[in-house]
Length: 276
Image (tube, rainbow, N blue to C red):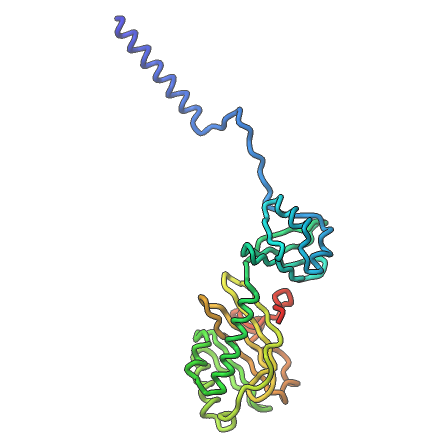
């Protein structure tokens, strides 16, 4: 009888411990204070707007950002997208980039895609220069390697008042070959003119893309180009070359993103313009 009582007591004690464990498991400690929810919005007083317009990251702004969790290098570059309203800040030291915008009397910072504009600018410039040099030297195999060689490739070359040549996809290759070697009026022509005068670079859909405008064209004239970065290489996707005597008839950029069915092509939004 005594053994049974001891056994019953042990069972009861075990049940009590189990119930306590089940009730307590997963519940919040009523004594431990709850952490305050932290805001993901980083903002500072708009007093720094004039500094940003001047391309400056003042020490006071850097300190305020640091207290909110953004460590930014003192040499961060500031690009004015819209004076007094929007800026792009590129921090090479920490490989970070932010857009800063005026909202409700505050400057709000949001992280954006980091782009090393100097590096990418030089790479895009080299691709177009190589295209011109290889074409003029009739090294067409090298020319074709500079294109994406996709169905979205598009080439427009205006060589006379009433003669504009269009090619897309794999037709670009054959057209360039014909212009360089087979067309009676262009086989001795070269791309002539000055270097790139305008360049735009942006990140879209997880990849980098660039637009260029130059007074370097087949014969003489102007060219607009659209390039994409595939892996570590910049490649040409679209080119539009218009001869000088026909520029007054050139009313729109046909390789422009707005003119393309897929919305992919030349763009010239000033917020993406790169200083050359």
